[in-house]
Amino acid sequence: MILRYQRLAQRIRDELTDINSEVARAQKSWEASLEADDPDAYIDSVALNLHGFYSGVERLFELIATQVDDSAPEGEAWHRQLIDQMAREIPETRPAVIDEFIAAALDEFRKFRHLVRNVYTIHLDSERMRLLVDVLPSLWEQLQKDLLKFADFLIELSKADEEE
Image (tube, rainbow, N blue to C red):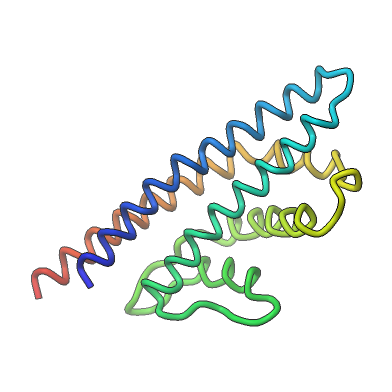
């Protein structure tokens, strides 16, 4: 149990580096698209990196759900339910990982990721992407703090187990 929490805390910290790269690449590609004569390739890159950003966050949420909560959502709406689960405190288990505002913002990225997976890139709405790219820096800053705080919680939890 102790090692599981320590490993998960380290995994969270490690994944944040990769997710940060996705955020930076999405922003860089968006800026390049604004200056390009033919922005399509850059727009595709933005879409791919926004997809990667959300997928990385969701992967961490899945790990928390399975390793800490011992309960991951199932069924057709499991992606949305996972966000909701992370925004709720689980009494006697863990605090909320994210707040409701972060959950609502992440849900927009979840919906966009679904589009990227299920439609041709020529049908992606660049205005919707602009809205996501605009909110991404502040969302990422807060989400990163929340996940690091949760990793610290896991370390404390592992120490509490050691004392028992």
